[in-house]
Image 1 (cartoon, helix red, strand yellow):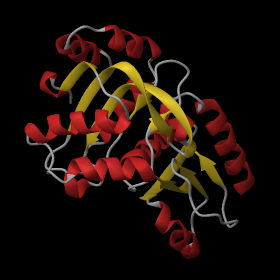
Image 2 (cartoon, one colour; image 1 turned 60 degrees about the vertical axis):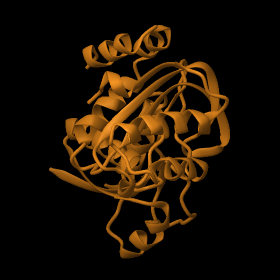
Image 3 (cartoon, rainbow over the protein chains, first blue to last red; image 1 turned 135 degrees about the horizontal axis):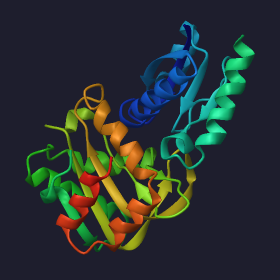
Length: 98
Length: 148
């Protein structure tokens, strides 16, 4: 199975980022894609990107600007109101990885 | 995951912080959180707001770091009149909120089931509408528990 690596970011690196991570894992697994996530705080973003190995960022709080990997706002995904838009963006990012 | 004792129906609050304060007290009195929880939630809300964008009933999910939590629990309030929260992810935008889920989460990895359930609840427009029309804590408890 294909595996992608995602950084999920929220204010405390716990609640919202875990919610986003779990929902993303469930949905992409149905498409045959395994998602591995790390839940982090905005202040940790640049360090993790520096380490490398992550395909994109899904965030629910503003994150520092960087141009190494794509970053997608996941607030709508969390609430379901804007879920489609988020998943379209995710799909576009995944397609570019191939 | 829900408890009648942690639910407040038709809470009257002048603003988001007052609502959070009242609800935090409920969690504190029941032994779910430390006394540092209230300020920690409010301070976090100012930096990382938790209003969730929706098409209908506005919902917010304030929370804070686990060090302020003794055991996991969720306090729920419906507000008599809406208060303004800033929106998660786009903190320059404000929105009106009628339902607050105040989360005390001590270990998110162990509470994945709870968080997943919460995700499914907050996108059920009909449920949220029924919640704000509920007249008692028991009614809200039953609504939340019968919804999966």
